[in-house]
Every structure is written in C-alpha cells, then in structure tokens.
Length: 178
Image (cartoon, rainbow, N blue to C red; front, side, top):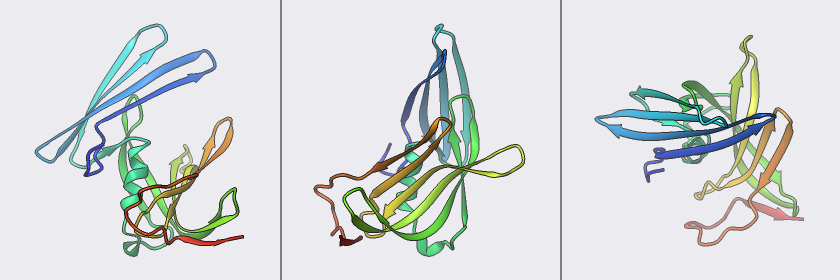
C-alpha cells in the first residue's frame, strides 16, 4: 500500500475442499478515480478477470485494517457504520466496518490494553449482520493492532500482538500487568 493507505497489490490463495483459487488485485489511481483489475486463477489454470473503477478508494482485506487504524474516533459514536468499497476476488462490493467503542482487553500474558474496537461485518440475504473480523487497536497515538478475532466458516481464530520495537510514540495503552 502507499503511504496514503491506498492498496497497490493484493494476493490470496484459498484451498477449500477440492477448490483451489488464487485471487490477485492490482490497484491504480488517476485523476481522483480508483481502478482495480482482479484476477482469479483456478487450479485448472482457467483465469477470470474483472475490472472496476470508483470515485472512492477501493480496499482489500488487509488494507482495510490499516485504514481502520487511521480513523479519528472522536468523529464516531458507538455503532456508527463506515461504508467502503472492497475488492473480493471477482467483484467490488459495498462493505461495512462498525465502530464498537472502547474496551480494555487482556492478552495471553495477562497484559491489559486500552483499545478502540472495530468490526468488519457482512450481511446475509435477510440483511442480518455477520461478524467477520473484530479489530482491537491500541488507544494511543500508535494505533497498533493488539488483537484480531476472526470468525471463519470452519471456526474462529485470534491473533495477538506479541512484540513491538521502534514505535514512534510511547506505548501508553498498556493499562496494567497482572
């Protein structure tokens, strides 16, 4: 991604049962327009390509986390929905991140952090929210991802920040160690 948090390239390989695909997205920008060329390659070698353009930035699954880290939460109330375009492999879809507020969370080492909480959600056919990823971001000037909760079709997973070096600002979101 660029320093302005604009995606440049995204790649995802997925093996689900007998299906194996590689999704790639190439992003470019010109005169205030975002362009994305998406390519899905199947195990058989068959390739599908799709192009899209938008007058707003188009994100991918990784760059939306970086974008969420940059949000000024003083502009949001708990429950506010932030809409954005996201490249999903075959198309660009309207997606939603919800600001959930602030929360003290504890990691595996019993260290507590003051965090900003955002949820990436999808909607089913009945417009019911399905949580996909919850981002816990340090509530300090670093805005580091402290924990990610992933809700997958096969179960769930959590990822924790384990080490930080060379941070620009003091790591003041640590509340206490038990």
